[in-house]
Image 1 (cartoon, rainbow, N blue to C red):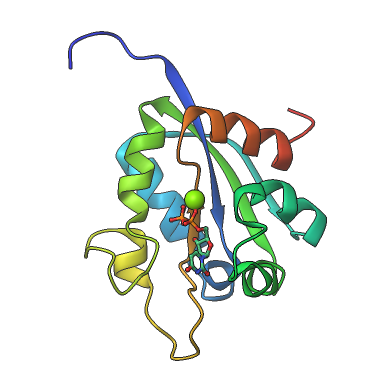
Image 2: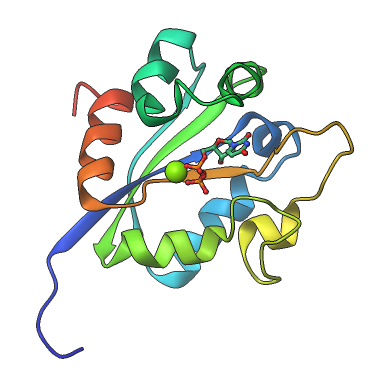
Length: 144
Ligand code: UDP
Ligand code: MG
């Protein structure tokens, strides 16, 4: 691709399992090693109210109650990364939703597994489009 690309921002969350397992640094290190800038960074507790906004598309899904339980089980680290095409690049770096299917070399494929309880715990969240990135950044960093 030869045209210039707009500078994008993406919302990344290190989810409660990632924080509890000491993987905050590994996630940030991978983003920095790739050359992306950290534009915002905060340790936060997700509330059910905030998650209903963040996961608006998933509120009606059968897995949603378990997702809220997972996402409120401990602190999360919210990060805004910046750079041309960072949304697509970080989604690729995160890997498939199910860590069992995520390719080696991805965050989920390198650090995730099936813990045998029927729940997906997959270390990170990453916005999947410019529209969802803008929406999610406004939810997690309303002051920005
Ligand atoms: N999720 C789940 N069970 C499912 C699908 C999704 O627990 O069958 C959770 C999982 O934590 C996932 C999140 O809901 O990361 C959002 O789902 P989505 O399909 O948007 O996956 P992602 O964009 O995170 O890869
Ligand atoms: Mg998603």
